Length: 332
Ligand code: G3H
Ligand code: 13P
Ligand code: ZN
Image 1: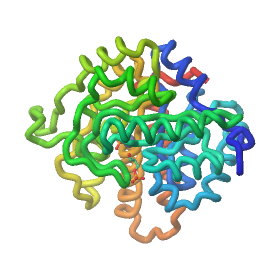
Image 2: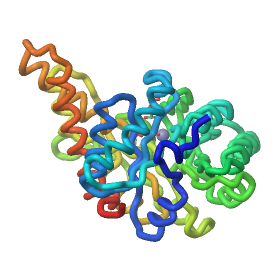
Image 3: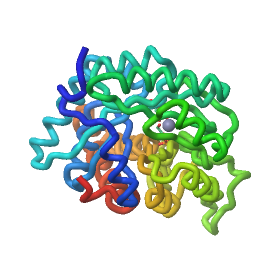
């Protein structure tokens, strides 16, 4: 059994309190491999941003849990070596069972999400409370994120066809019954690169899809019910059109891609939203860079020659997010 403190990690408690007070959001970037982790750490050290390293259960299966634990330890040491100490959280993204949450906590995670959003309200409360009771009873206090409301799209093993906005009238009861440290809500974001159906959008003069706005009225109601409580936004990739175009230019097919515009995320980050989850944009950045190298240099077969540029592009993307969108730069 490993405590996250042995790995040099922190939980989200202090980080979220500062973010809510300061009107910015902590980046929660998913990773599955070394290049992604290097890009996250380089970008967050250079921008002096706190960071949440997110691992889904799929990522955990892909990377191996012992390797992951030591990658997180390595990330802490790597950040120090780069010359500036930033607070780093290791977080389970979309945990779907009590057993998975316990397993992650015992292998050094400092924060877990228990995603009971596909269950009935009462079942969600019971499962989330069970995870909180365990996580909070530990001497190192592991923080827990719950979810109310359903995001459309794929949430790892949890798949939802339709989104259902979070009901503001349920949030106080959920938080007080479960004891969660933060709450993920549904206000119109969704996972993946197709966040809205084309028929939900308008098109600009170039034919680019323009999505409908997020439900900021629901967010405001939630904030009124839970003043100062840390709120989390999943599905917050912007799906940059430049990456989509580059991927298509070099042979990819990503029709009808649409994300959350940056101005909407900027607005959310200034509110009680203090954690913003981004995975798809990183996938797009890496894929665009890799496709470009392989198309332009067909003789290349050294993985470092395409993963290196992909890592650099990812770092650039994350620096931009921290500085220009989330406001987390210079907060560490
Ligand atoms: O919300 C889901 C995250 O983007 C993780 O995706 O389950 O494919 O690792 P994954
Ligand atoms: P995106 O698919 O919008 O990047 O969302 C990622 C996410 O919510 C991870 O939990
Ligand atoms: Zn998510």
